[in-house]
Amino acid sequence: MAILPIVKVPEPVLRQKTKKIKKIDASIQKLIDDMIETMYDAPGVGLAATQVGVALRICVIHANDPDMRSAQDSSPGLIVLINPEIVKRSGTRLCTEGCLSLPNYRSDEVPRSEKVVVKGQNRDGRPVRYTAGGLFAEAIEHEVDHLNGILYFDYLDSIDKLTVYGPAEDGEAGEEEEVTAGH
Ligand SMILES: [Zn+2]
Image (cartoon, rainbow, N blue to C red):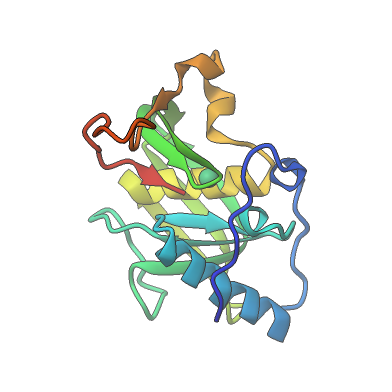
């Protein structure tokens, strides 16, 4: 396994429409392993293939949330979604979100669904379907957006609405670090 470099805005691959995976071969398995390691290293709650420069429909998610239901997955907490498709969305809410491809920024006003149902395949090619709420739902919408070339700040009226956080450049302690999910 290897930690891959995370592609940053404005790399064009982040805006590319990704290709559906037809055959889950050894190279795809290696990509999945590397994406999982890269996500944990970041750390992030999710990672899409475009963020490691690959325009294929794969994402990995590890969102610790009581709403997470992953009965079909042997390792609850971590899921791999191949060719994911959100088939149902319900409710609306505002989420606090950040993206590994745009470090040190976040927004408290990202419109998301309360609940989503996603279907796709796991890394063995078996069909999976998850009903998600909370952070899991947010992660699914964020990652599936990535696979469609959409970034979370596209939902804001203006990029000026992004909040800068992290260490201040002068070496003084910056704004108290809040926990923001990075994907
Ligand atoms: Zn992201």
